[in-house]
Length: 189
Length: 189
DNA sequence: TAGCGAAACTAACATCTGTTAGTTTGCATG
DNA sequence: CATGCAAACTAACAGATGTTAGTTTCGCTA
Image (cartoon, rainbow over all chains, first blue to last red; front, top):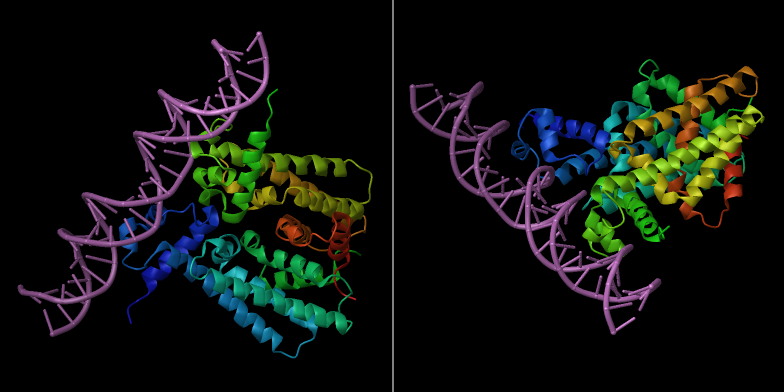
């Protein structure tokens, strides 16, 4: 097996540029320059611009899927499951800030993989909804509109990539703890 | 004064397309086709693609600025001010769903107006931070990291445009009420 | 040392892009 | 009916874009 380092470098650099300007506004010449080569040389390592986007987004989406399946299959309480979801998002956002930006903002530019991505996202949201509903039935969670709760929680978590890199002094565990506390108990004294 | 309807239609249609694919991926030919004219004809009404983006984003950003200044200058409690901010976001998101998408996702493609936009956004965030800090001092709000609270609240509110249009049966007042309750008191029973 | 292969390069392509110039159309007013 | 003007059109531009073809470079192994 050859070293995949060059391909990995291309994908990593692309994710950084996609975060700054979005997929459509980043050209293959931009990407090549950022790496220090000519655009045509990129094609020794990748097949298309689209393939780069797919590698970035699908990798993370599948990571989320594996994460939530593990949480769902645990025997934690519903509130604890939600806390684990917060921790999952904090961890992925911390490890792959740039990729998360593409997942959030450039998924609509997926071509062949668009339907697959949408399916993963839909399944993910339904699993969270299931936990919230179950928590309401068991009395752990206040009655309310489960979709509003999921929306609020998930948009906060999905936007973590914007915010995590600014706070390097705060470690992941502490951030996950603060966020869980906030989302579950609110701000009211 | 001539009728501004054609220009307004161009900006409104552009906002819709920008929401779907992002500023960079929407061409002037796409926009013209969506309206039912040729690309060159657009220039009888607008000066550049960039001007359209500016019209969309700066209009909303200034609306937020006016809104928060009004709230800040009221004599409401800090918690009530936060509730008013929620209502402000719900109202703007409901009235201008497509424009909010550009504000959130395409602000970095502003050229001349980029610094002005960033200044408005920064001022806005600092005003919210001021309310949260003041609420902690007065004992209305639990001690905690004010930036995490603001981040969580603001990312939820900024993403409302993704979600409001799906829930046409829910009116703005009810949504604002539910969201306030959720953000302030959390989900814990 | 010869030569093989990976990975860089130059050159070019066909198409798309924002925008301008110049022309035509058709309605409202004299 | 004549005419003036807003707003549409066609044609074209100069440059950017993703990608391919063919060539060169250079370190490793036989």
